[in-house]
Amino acid sequence: MFTKLRKSILKAAAGVLALCIVLAISLVCYLVISHNQLVSLPSPSGAYQVGRTELDWVDSSRPDSLADAPGKSRELSVWIWYPAQVTASSLPAPFLPPAWAKAKAADDGLGAYLERDSARIHTHSFLDAPISSGQGTFPIVVFQPGFGPAIYDYTVFAEDLASHGYVVVGINETESQFFVSFPDGRVIARSNKGNIPDNADPATADQDANRIGQVWTQDAIFVMNQLELTNQDASSPFFQKLEVAHIGLLGHSFGGAVAMAVCQSDARCQAGANLDGTPLSDTANQPTRQPFLFVSEGYSQPFPQGCLSDKNCQPLYAAYQQMSDQAYFVTVNGAKHFNFTDRSLRSLPLTRVLLKQMGIVGSMDPARGLEITSAYLAAFFDHYLKGENSPLFAGASSAYPEVQLESRKP
Image 1: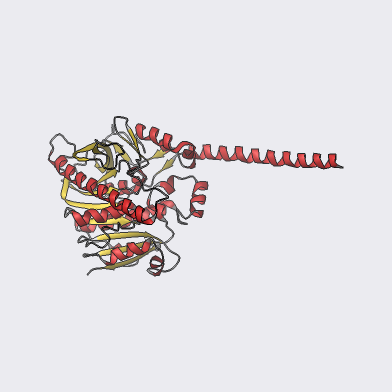
Image 2 (image 1 turned 120 degrees about the vertical axis):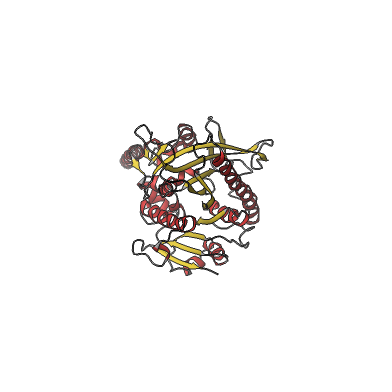
């Protein structure tokens, strides 16, 4: 009797093991096949074709206080998207330059198979193409990422703005991103001083955020200084093509909080936009005198009740209410925090299901979320950097019923 029972158990166990092996092999095959499928980023909606270039700028006047080892000057990898004059010889820009792709693969490890292979992602930019001659000069948008992501995670927004006639200057935040690759092949990983530990108590995390935010603010100011020099440099491809008197600041998450801080401290900011970024406590109550756009994830309750019941949205709405100039608050129903990056679009379908369960991305189609945010960003900067009006800020939009809009002017 016991022999028969043991045989039955072993037979059942073998069946379960075989099923597990089949499922594991199927999962691996799914991940590998999906990882290697081609994906094209959404096409820009503007009239211009887009160029992209990568620069290495060093602020020799400023020590890098985020570096663990002393003695380094602050150094930034800067990506620039711009209206381009594309010819038959122009080369498409890869989603990631080779050095960046290598660094990302090393950083991701096996996690790379949860999203598309960067080499299989099609952008709409052309590498180092000449800047467009169709217009004299172009306004500027300085763009800072969230805490950890790199500026390439916002390619869709950058390409779309560039197609509308903007020079989009994306800052990679050395020591605070997971990694930064420089054109000479150096890779700098996130440092202890540039990071906020997950186990930090609230007071320490707040102190670290303000300390790092001050560095990022100075990074943006340094980049604006460099743009002024670049515009005067006859050897630069951007010589006399930059409208340095018309600069907007844009950021997501921590970068959105820094965009507010930059506009508070530097009058060259003519308009700012914050994509779902909780303001820094050091600057949350300071006046922001430029027009400002806040974009927030959606909530189950109607706006503003849903926002006011959320601890992350409350300070964003409070900052909106304290603006000294025209301000807009846009809520995108169906979006969550990382719908304001390309990552949800690049993730595999199975990965997106998991991310939805974790509350990291929302229920909306990733491309739709990027389309909506791109439209409101372009309309906002068109109005305040170019003087062009848009019906999007007049009230509810039939084209974007997912959006709830509130506006105020003191």
